[in-house]
Length: 432
Ligand SMILES: Cc1cc2nc3c(=O)[nH]c(=O)nc-3n(C[C@H](O)[C@H](O)[C@H](O)COP(=O)(O)OP(=O)(O)OC[C@H]3O[C@@H](n4cnc5c(N)ncnc54)[C@H](O)[C@@H]3O)c2cc1C
Image 1: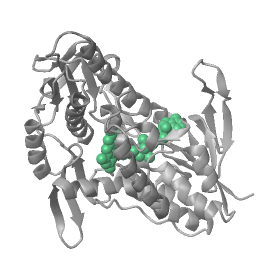
Image 2: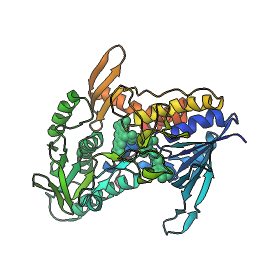
Image 3: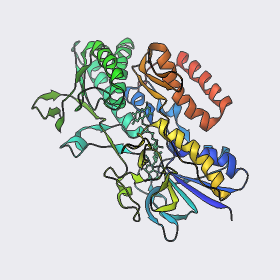
Image 4: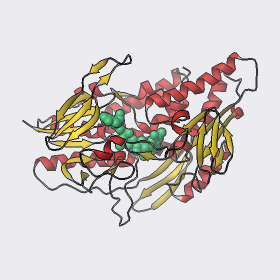
């Protein structure tokens, strides 16, 4: 029997890896590649703030695992990882239920020779009182769509009413990339909604507050990007609060540690991440305080050579002599998937595995449709600051690289063309 590689999690990293391995080892019959995911379809997570604002229709950008598996010589299994038995080399999958709570796919176990865990992360609310009950997180397509429906419902209610100067208040906790991009995208959505005639709420009456506990917006990115982003957001009318920790979330707003009450009908929590709780004690594998599995530079877990982990759910040393780990970003998941695709070919030949070294190609922050601000890193030129249309083009290219890994060059070009055509025949904002 050929070597069984089981990849759990078909996100930014896992799906790229399954596709690459399927096209190489799977196609040649050298390995049996299986991808497991809790859902039937994949959407690239960095698009979720656009789904929330309505500028992206998630059903157009989602990918079906069953079809992707068929086209790329791997097998897909629907199921949620619920346990692991390292001694017998089997994973446990929980039963999948349909919307009525009836069993769709039963609980089962799956054997592996090599296991790759790539189940990503979820938002960390740090146990803040009321956050889980009153905030929307942007971890899944369903959550992003729920936010969009709530936003649209406010506009529809206002449209049906008599008043012409209705308001809507949105509070976003966390001014990292997700919070900043969502704020800019919502500003754009407010203008589009008014342009489509839902103008009882005028664009300036969408009150967006962005709250950050750290001293500046984008605390994880270079300081010189924070200033221009902060200024641009304020120019768009976003109220930016830095050095303000949220201590409680209520149904009608938020309270900061300094005692200020910020009224908000829509509240999004976008501050910090943690890996799924299941990884905290997964048959004795080592994990850190945010549940990430500890891995070596080969991306093998510290205690088991046959189990790999990568992407957001893994704590991989940055390798620069510091204590820091590789940041939880799509860029890192993409690089690690490419490395593992090569590593598995070597592993099957009994050769030593390559080590992962994070390459920071820079960070770009999208500020709605036409602009972006960020830096690009290059060997020759060091770090170059980019703004405007050109930065936006580089920003989009990260998603195109993901599509290229999944569909190949030709189909990616077709998708780009179809996106262009779609833009001329469909509303610029999802209105349902
Ligand atoms: C709104 C938003 C914007 C972002 N913007 C950027 C950006 O601009 N640039 C950037 O570099 N990064 C960005 N990120 C971060 C980026 O999305 C993540 O770093 C990246 O998706 C991590 O990839 P991953 O493969 O580790 O996990 P994910 O892409 O999260 O995939 C995890 C997969 O595992 C599946 N899964 C989860 N639990 C289980 C289970 N128990 N069993 C089976 N399957 C399971 C999920 O269904 C999912 O398919 C953004 C994130 C968000 C939320």
